[in-house]
Image (cartoon, rainbow, N blue to C red):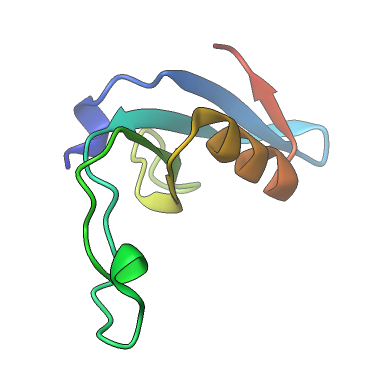
Amino acid sequence: MDIQSIVAIRHGECVYNNTTGYRVKIIKWHILYGTGDYEDPPEIRDNQNVECYYVFYEDIINKGNFNVSGGGFLHLEEAVNSVEANVNVKWFK
């Protein structure tokens, strides 16, 4: 998955201390990656070929590099709620 070239379906800026810190983007993908841990149940362990959404945060030092994952979600609303629960975000789209 080349995160840098995938177009975001939602994107925004994370704000802290009243200044813009870094960007966040949510992308649509076709594989919900599993943990690969043999102790997890199959629905968590194994990859699923389903429409899903991933959250990525911009590196604070290397601007433009979205290398911090915020996880994968089956529904867009879950991805948005996860971002909003963890950071102060201003959405653009």
